[in-house]
Image 1 (cartoon, helix red, strand yellow):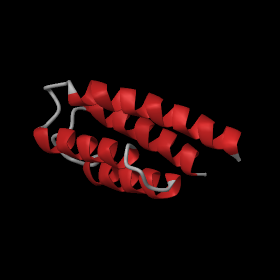
Image 2: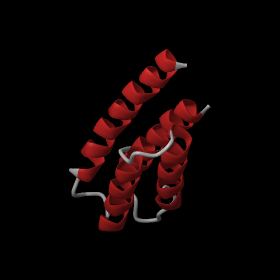
Image 3: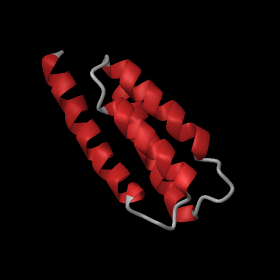
Image 4: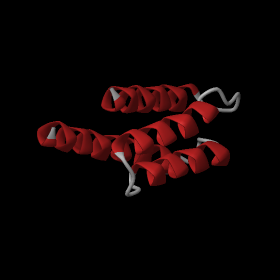
Amino acid sequence: MGAGNAKAEEKIKQVVTLMEFILGDTSIPKNVRKAVSDAREKLQADDDLIVRTSGAIYALDEVSNDINLPAHARTQIWSIVSALESIRE
């Protein structure tokens, strides 16, 4: 179980890196960047892996359908959610 957990933590680090790109993109609406920031905080919290990933997925899922979200950002958010779902399983 330890090796799987280390692999999950590595994947979370990669997801956080993707989130950093979104947070730095000023073409993305402020409310979406706030949700990504909240999701990042949930991932970096000291909770159980399932709790962290589920909280982040929930936060991102809320904004992934935002009408003002540029197409490139929507694709990035979907890839982040997909990666988080694979970690959770």
